[in-house]
Length: 203
Image (cartoon, rainbow, N blue to C red; front, side, top):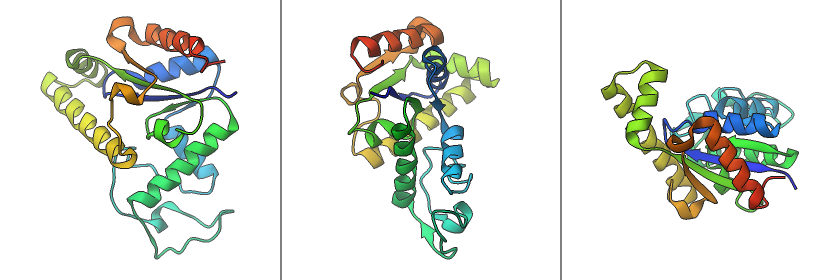
């Protein structure tokens, strides 16, 4: 059985850092936006496919994202809409899961891999904690940090709900929801690993 850990997260909760910590502790591959884009490029898609971020939905020209490759010749006059791009993203994520162990951040991976045995986690934290983290790590003012946090949360929620017909951050959608402010990055990673092993979802 492969160990597949899908992590959703509220913005500023440190979900990406926690995912990286889990990856290092377990010695398994980590996939965030940048690394998923690399897998897509290796599969014949352009590296720009996910360049605008995981939550953005708009109309894209295929000629901007595809090249002639082993996948075949793509009509440069064609267009890829939201649903086609999500299908491409889904195929890339499924190919990652089929190859073996992985920690996957965001991108509705829990929904895309819903037919597989995965550990699905949502990482959250109080707003004040997240704002302080963003101020410290991004050099933002309190007002800037709060506006960024709310905008990112809103776009992530819209993106997830649109494609999954579910509810982003709702506890019943995940095996585990955890507040990262209590144990911090490393402690939260240890807690998730311990939970996953007890649940039989981590080898």
